Length: 283
Image (tube, rainbow, N blue to C red; front, side, top):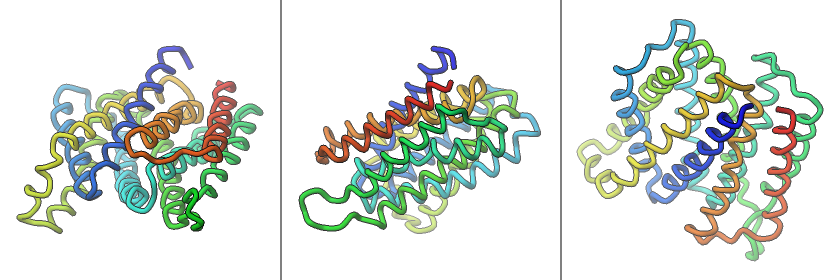
């Protein structure tokens, strides 16, 4: 992994945490994801005429990835509805590198070495800590529904990461791949919202249009950077470095959503970051 690739993935981490925070900020999650998905589709449509069409071998991956992304967005909406941003985001993102490491070994032949295996173990310890750290100071049990939704979100992230890693390498054009992925995945949620709200749709979207479209632009930029990086380096280290967004997400949760981080969650997040560092050492 070259410094340029690492810098691109770190920038993607910041922009990804930012658009997730925007999605969490919009109270009606369907409104937020309609704007972000629909905005991404519009960006893809504007970009497509100016970039190369992906090679034929990439289209099965594009179709499969679009389906996985729709499931991911539904799970992410549920995670943000049920849990704190500072809890749901680290669990969802922290799960992904662990699963990507396994899937990349099986489907891409990228076998982890000892450093990556150690990173997986340490990250698992941190993930467990985050999952068990419930609502602080209230005496209530952890929100297992929110934790389950966040874990399922992480698995879906890992699935589309590997599918897209293989697909973008087969496409011959990372820009063409991201444009058509945004088009294909961006249809489902706006169509569902239009069916559900019909004539009410414009009125529901209008108050959040500006911030929602900003989230769409950040989302496309974040994943476009990751897809480009996946053509330059192995999938697991990129996934691990990308999840430095956990730190950005935690800071956003504390500063903008006034979510208490707390010492136990700080230790758990530290373990996850240490595990990510071990996996990066392998690269």
